[in-house]
View 1 (cartoon, rainbow, N blue to C red):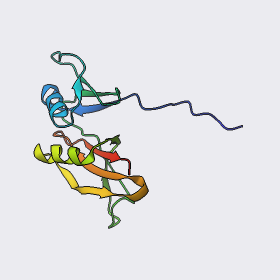
View 2: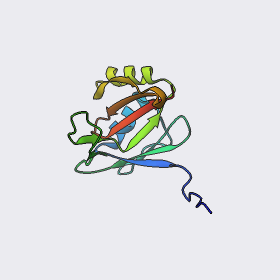
View 3: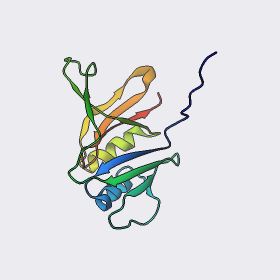
View 4: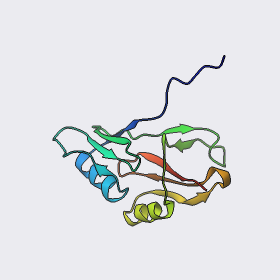
Length: 136
């Protein structure tokens, strides 16, 4: 008998930010996410993605961005600064244009990974590293 997965999907994710209002503004203006409710001093922000899933922006004094080093991803064999979250998009070209227009760090250009789709890696102003993916 095969075990059934006990986890269904990622319902929400938590992202550390140094300035919640500034981050909420960036995620809204650059990524097009919608703020769920008005900001309250000292609290985080809930941003709503196109699928309805929530992305929590939480205050993180001292700033510890979401990322870690891993092996096997860099062509040189060196450690690679990994992204812990990969988002899906329906318009990766518009996403890239918005990120570049905002002066965000973008790793190279959109990559066509064949059956793995189109991929783009970027960082928010706090250095949180993400990847966006679009179906081929």
